[in-house]
Length: 140
Image 1 (spheres, rainbow, N blue to C red):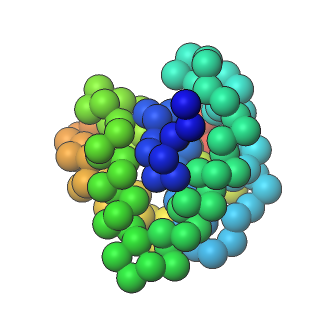
Image 2 (image 1 turned 135 degrees about the horizontal axis):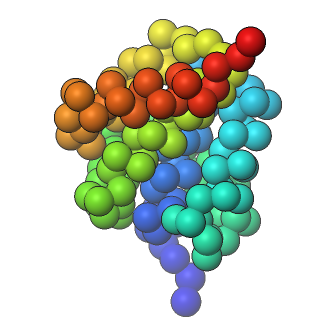
């Protein structure tokens, strides 16, 4: 059984948001890719995920970013395919990718704000998630 080109698994949805944050400033950094790979290798939610799908999911995100309403379409796909119980997980992973290179670009901040809004992340919970990401990616 093959999946339709835009049918996403819950894990695909998480990957799509991480890729979107990385690509949001039009400069995908090595530190961001390493963070995505580390997350996929270590978190239980990706335990049975076919990592070969990352290429397909990345291309889907890039294609959507080329369209005028692509971000809305991406959020629609994510919300259609990601269980609500994983919304905070999605936001946490997006924050980790954004923080991976040690600096947040304005475009990344705007996308994180949009993710928080679209996934209905409570402001207090969002602030705690952001604080955790900042703490995990702190340098000397």
